[in-house]
Each structure stands twice: as structure tokens, then as C-alpha cells.
Length: 310
Image (tube, rainbow, N blue to C red; front, side, top):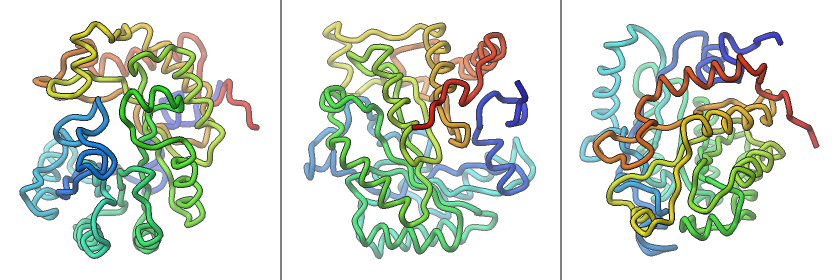
């Protein structure tokens, strides 16, 4: 099999960005101080049961500082490892379209005005994309490359209810349609290992997404973290965690089912060492990533190998 994504058997984000911008591109994770309708009572309180106190922005900047301050702090850290490159302003924590339009415009503008920024990434919920927000995103997509990240997690509705996702599949499908009609790329978050899900459920989520007009995917391993609602299930003996070996096999199967053009932004995940309860093997991130590469190579698996276009 000819490797067409550099040294990877899948269409990695690093490969995509180097092809698009011609050099290394770093992601600068920002916390704009927003909330979430799944936390403030608009939809629910407490958020999704796996979500940390920082709204899945555990590695983002400090929301007490301005966007510029956060950007420069993180950029300085990045520069210790990489001496040159461009940047993606990534609004990561909480729901980053959940604020008045003038506030969103101000935050996004401050981010893309930073030197070297070539892209804007917005993590949000499918139910927080009003016409006014879509208009704003389309406006910014004329200035820099924009992608929007939607937290689907699973295509199984019973699991969605269990994790308190707060919306049903038709809402997600409309959000994808609305964004794509405006020429905005869509990146979807999924989680492997959610409570009560079997292997076939996780594979079905990938099959479901493989038939949608999405441009990127993030596959996260479920992390059980302290002070999340999911801890209750764990304490009641209602959770099982995948072994590293099972996860590697599952990820490899998922990669084979994805369309070759979909960019794989992530195939594992990060959790703060001081917050992680299970699975502890996930802390060895590079060991896991290298093991996935080896498994793909040893078994001649590559992205799109089992993809069937509908």
C-alpha cells in the first residue's frame, strides 16, 4: 500500500496542515470565558457527565487573562520546542458560540489579529448555531481558514441521554448541513469507551459519520476524571474501561472505515495527570500512538481500506 500521508497510514492533522500552509502549524488553545447551556440551566445543569470543571479546556489558557495574553503565554511555551511556524487560534473551553454576537466578534477578532495566525477553530455544540452565529462564522471564514468542532460523542441516542448530551441526532445533522452550506469545515468529536457502549456501538458511530459531509474527526478515549458526574457511575460499579490492546484494535478498525479525505485530528486524548482516575495506561500518550502506528503497519490497515461510499 502506498503511504500518501507522509509517514502515517491515516490522514493526520499534521500532514493536512503542512500541505495547506507549507510549514508547521501549532494550535493555541484559548479559554474565552464562555459558559455552556448544558451547565447554566438553559438545557441542563452539570454538563455532560464526562466533562471536567474547565469545560474540556483543561489545557487551554487562563480565562482570567485576555485572549492576547493567553495566546502569547502559550506561544512562548511552544517556541521552546519549535522555533518557527504558524498558529491556529483554538477556542476550546466550554461552548464557544454561546455568547452575544458582539462578544463573539470581539473575541474572534482579537485572536486572528495575533501575529502568525492562519486559522480559527471553534469548539461548540450543534444546538448553539443560530443564523446570526452562522453569519458571523461565514464572515470570519473569508478572513482566515475556519473549522467548527461539534461534540457528537456517539450516534447512539440511549448513550447520548445517559451522558446528558442534551440534544438528539437531527440537531447535529442540521448543524452540519448549515455549516457546510456556508463553506465551513466541520470536525466531529467522538468518544470510545462511554458507559454501556459495546464495540459495535462505537464502530456504528464511525460508520454513521463516514456517510456525513464532515472534513475532520477527533476520536477520544474516555477519561474518567475527578469531580465529574461520571464518577458516580464508577463508584457504583457501572463502568468498565478498555485495555490498551482493545483500544488500539478498535481505533485501527475505525481508521479503516473512514473516507480517505477526512482529516484525523486525534486518535487518543489527554487528561491532566492529577485528575485522571482511569484508564491509567492512557497517560503514556506517545507509547499508545506508536503502538497504533505499529498495529496499522503489521496488519496492513490504512484509512479508507474498508470505507464504502454510499
